[in-house]
Image 1 (cartoon, chains in turn cyan, purple):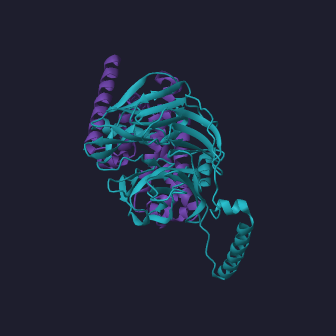
Image 2: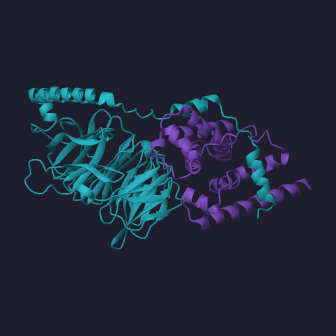
Image 3: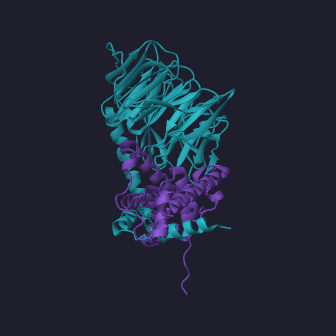
Length: 385
Length: 178
């Protein structure tokens, strides 16, 4: 039974007048998505005929145009990569606020006033707008302001922090901790509050946040994609389907489309599991394609996946995933990729040296070498803000 | 007598493009959302922004909303997250002492309630959040725990500590007056 203080609180908290401004009402209603179109039976044959005509015209165009043939993978593009002597320090590409990479147990990061070159780390991730860097350092999850001010330990964990993913809001951080033979997924607030375990048994894969912070997708210990609905506090384990054992997951930047990649497959994952899988061939290298090393969205409709020595692009539209560019060979093994505005990619290559290159996404021609560091032998997820 | 449409019905209609249904949801939930934002932020114009932003986000994402769940809880989670996000960002930028609104945000309340809400405004953000969800929006500790993804015990302890703190502030004020 509520006491006197509680009753007063209830009264006081409900007494304030709350008249909504008309502008707020209008803005909220304007945010409604457009109504789904009504189906009209009479128009179906017409639409089918029109679709067939467009398909026929597209096929003729594809056959005639070398660029278009290359774009859909009918012809293979052979890149001409020439590495100039690169800089020793990591450089932020144009259009980004900061960049970080981890390879061989060391990290390189630069944003605003902070520049870290080759420090020991087990995971690294920049916050939105690159205002902070979260670093896994041994058993600590550490955050550092990129304005140069002090670092703080957000959490002392039982094992190594192996993956970090900062929410777009940017209040929360998802991170994966090694615990013996298992990996645990945690959520924590950026100031170190409210640390909690989301899943005690996951794969050591970087989780991904939906654009609105309402969901987190990750890979379970047995390779299934799991979507954690943070609004309703429940998890959905999606069947492996055509994807098999997922190794990378990535939400689209402005929608709820979720891509996942496994060794040799990429798919956009729906409520019932992966749909429309597309193989990621190894390019000119003969043999198994090898594990998926990178997955990113170049635009709201273009997924880029890398494995072995190649990078492939896929177009997600009308509920289907199609090959946009067949594997393009890279000189060196891609170990991480990130997308930049303006149809550019940043690719981390780990052989023979760790190199970060900014390339044109269409041709993979190098625009700039961002880092050229001594050889490494580890995965290198790229954090770009 | 006209029967009041359920939230789920309104959500379904709004999802199909009905601005009337969305307007009805807006009218139902604006007062609670705005009051929660006001208590959390302590500023009226910021409460306007937070509540409006929360509605925009909720309506834009209606297609993903699970109709079997309460719309209010979903919206209120967005409100709380937006308010905390703004407060933390602002605290980093300007420092806590500069955040307070020059004029009391509770100007339309009587002196006693105003004093109590001023005391609520001095609570830490975590405690303030559970207080507004419990006493401003009427959620049970279990519902708050689900909404904030916290153990129920944590919610109960935050509530108990908040009430303790409020009692202490009130006793101090009473002593000063005496």
